[in-house]
Length: 264
Length: 188
Length: 188
Image (cartoon, rainbow over all chains, first blue to last red):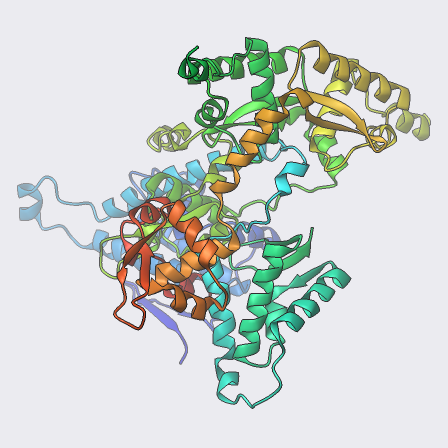
């Protein structure tokens, strides 16, 4: 079933955004440059702010019809350029069209006179834009800070850094890895056939030989080779034993990343 | 002779110069920023003396135009190279600057830094766009951590910034971040 | 105009003070002793200038009674702490390992956190390895506490996580422990 978002405007003009088949009109212009620009928008609010600025419009008095039109044009262009248009961009399109139609409704003169503070249909959007823009500026500040920090280097490793083989991973990392491995072997366990099991001593010997030969061993790959749950547990204990007793370090480059056993 | 008195007087007596030197040595060997509190405890000195030693050390490094500097970061003191020499250092280490964070990741990080603890739906509300992959990136780079659950429907996980965030962005602590309201002036 | 001449004249021009600072920065970031030859190559300077810079640096460190020294080791230069302060350095390094948990302790803690209350034989069954020393470490560090005896053969002691555990991991209560489901959305 194609994922389609259909929006009706007051002129019965239909914008249909089909994630798979959308073929919108071609917009003229230097597409390469636009492609880069489009890719840079961090979200619909970002795009909207860009359009408001491009139109030199006042954020507190957004010309909603013109901005909506521009916004929809951009979405069409994104599709034309094969840039995946996230659902969030379409939700914003719908919001804009809704505001636009509300603005076109004639005001009830009786209500308007009574209630001075009748809400501008644009108000909520303006509030969101202002709030968002603060964080966008804060992101810029963070970017500057990280650029400065990247120019400062800490000292190189020294001897005392390595006097304990510890793992820099949270409880969650460890649990995730073990659960992943066990889950992967659940099916195999069901068909487990009686076979000669490798002893813990042999497992440790094999693993040591491998670390010695290659310098490092990817733990996930190593566990992958095990034929049964029991062998897997033996392998896991072997790893724990080696880390405790030997000059071997456990490394993990990123959270949920592969864990590497490396010779120190 | 009283033994107890002897024990009390065993508190290390160091000249100010020695204390400066020892503080320098400890800041150097520590593999993470080391706090004034830890220095005071290990050396059995008053925090004020430690603070004075660090200030002395900083001005020494400044005064002799050292290639290194002592900075306060993530609640502790750390030695690092001066920014002026980053080209030479990078050339020597043959490193490239870290992959920069995307605009989406930086925005998500800004929201988390200022609104922490904050949930995924709350981030969506402010950014107007799904931020799952940005959050994954930030977790991978250890810039954010899980901070318990929110007492709301579904008890969603909340996120906050990590110590690595302070280190990578050169902040003493979170209060060093400019107030989010300060950015309002830029907006208008 | 001759291009080659232009290239030659592009050699970096640094003041002696700058060169000293840069040499200091490179010795500091290097992961092993760095030789005069390597320094000369990276910085495109004469070996004599490098040698002079190092001598200058050494006498600066000497002159100000620094806690650090520049030593020649294995044909290269390295920054290290002065031997006089080894006692303090060692004392500091000894306090440090406690900050982190060993893999065995972390493993045991994870089992206790997710399976509590749990007995030693039960932990053995799950981990497949004796956990006595890890349990002792965790008890010493007050991360776990005894939670009464199990009504089973031998009435073994049961263990669970402590209040300190919650504090250290930033959890309000045990229900805040992350589960796989919390992170599944992000990983996809």
